[in-house]
Amino acid sequence: MDVISALAGGKQETQETPKPSEYPGRFEEYSREAQAVLLNPGEAFQGLRFSLMKSVSQSSTHDFATAHLLSLAPAPASSEYQFATTLLSHGDLQIVGRVDTNGVFISQLKKVFDNDFIVDLSFQAAQKNEFLGMDMEYRGHDYSAVLKVNNHGVREASFMQRLFPWWSMGVRGTHSVDDRKTVLSVCSRLVGTHSVLGTQGDSEGTIDMSYIHRFSPKFAFCAESHVDTAKSSQEHKIGYEYNLISARFRGMVNMVSGRVTSLLEEKLGPSSSFILSADLDHAKKDYRFGIGLSIGSS
Image (tube, rainbow, N blue to C red; front, side, top):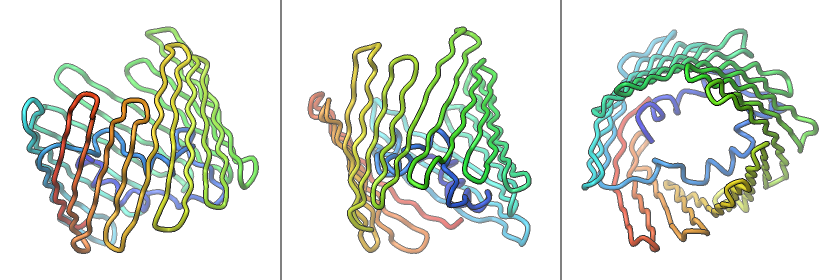
C-alpha cells in the first residue's frame, strides 16, 4: 500500500454519504468482498518498509495530515521514499497529493454534492507521461451511474442496478478514441447469507468470476478465475483470511503458476502495526520476504 492509499483509506468513508442498504456499489465493485481478501499487486513487498502518518491540524471543519513511506529493497528492485499530504473537509471534500523519489507526482480531489453526486479528479505526472482523469458518480436509492473520461482518449460509462435484495446486475461501455474500439461488459452479483458470487464478461471474450464464503467472523475463503478466450489464457486463484484478536492474516495461491503470497498485519497499538510479507514463486525459484512497520494516527 502506498502513502496516498493509507491517507485516504482511513477517512474516505467519512467523506461520502453512507451507502444505503439497497445501494449496489459501482460496476467495478461487483466482487469487492473477494478483492478485500485477495492480495492486490503492491501489497506484498520485499525488503524493509516503514511508514509514518501524522495528523497535523484538526478542527471542527477540516483535518490535515501528512505521511512518509520509506522502502528499502535489495537489487535489482529500487528503494523509494514517498511523501503525501491530505486535507479533509468534513462532509464533502477530500484533497490528497503524493510525490516520490522516482519523479512521480499524484494528486486527487474528491467532492460530494447534495449527498448523492460525487466528482473525483485525479492527476498523475511521471517523467514525460501525464494523466488527467475525471470520475463522476450519481448514487440513487438502488442504483449507481458512473461516467469516466481522461486525456488518453478513454471514455467509460457504467450502470449498476439492484434488482432484488440478493441480486444486482450492471452494464459498462468503454470506448478508446485512439484505438477506435468499444468494449461492452456485463456483470452479476449474487449475495447470500454468508457468501457472494460475482461474474463479469465482455465483448472481447474475457470472463471473470469470484466467490467468497465467510465461515465465521474470523475466517473467510475465496476463489477467483480469469479466462481470456481470445488469447487462450487463464488464471485461477484461491485466497483466505483469518482474523485474530490483534492480527489479520491473508494468503493467496495462484493455481496455475503455483505462486504463494501471504501477508500478516499485527496491531501493536491503536495506531501502529507490524507487517510480515512473503512472496514465493517456486517455479522461478524466486523468493521475496518483507518486514514493515506502520506508525501514525489519522
